[in-house]
Length: 136
Image (tube, rainbow, N blue to C red):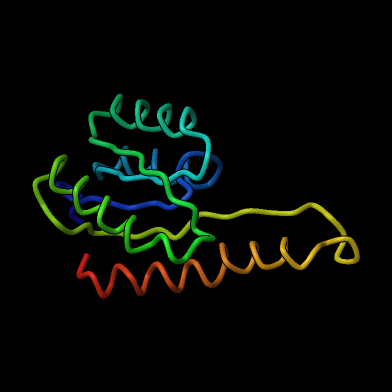
């Protein structure tokens, strides 16, 4: 597969599996946009590591449990694509963002369960739908 000139968007790309995916893609010649929720310093470190491979990278903040923020995020994404790659689309989407509650079901509050569902199901569906409608 031709990877030169390709750009990937990886949600939750600042840590764990998302970080590993971002670095692997960069080593394959793909530029990367990662998202992070609240650990900007982790995201900045991943961006620096990607740039050390010779690829371009950007980190944008996104809380995938807040569906109503997706339109505004997509506008930030368009700006980042224009400013960094002079384009308005990306090539690969990796819906990786996640969260966990390490608690027994009996002690998990409904609000915690709602966040899990929003991040892992509703957020993935809604964000993918948002970017598809935006033509990204």
